[in-house]
Length: 56
Image (tube, rainbow, N blue to C red; front, side, top):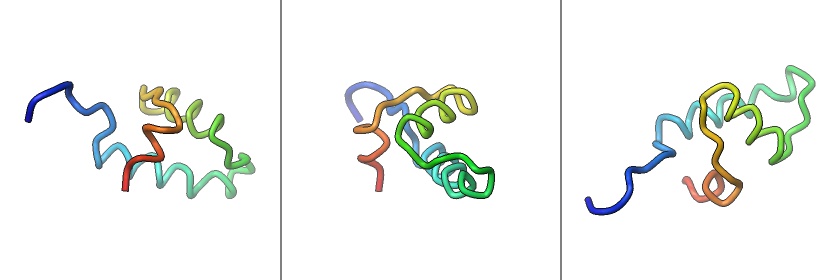
């Protein structure tokens, strides 16, 4: 496959989705800002909303 290496793999997307599922249990509001901040802190992935929203 030509082009740039994909930064957001399916495995990483699943980990981020699981992290988001746990937000309410930890009293963390589910917002794009929190998703991006916690993803960067936990997984080193600082993608934007468009990148995270494009994974199915």
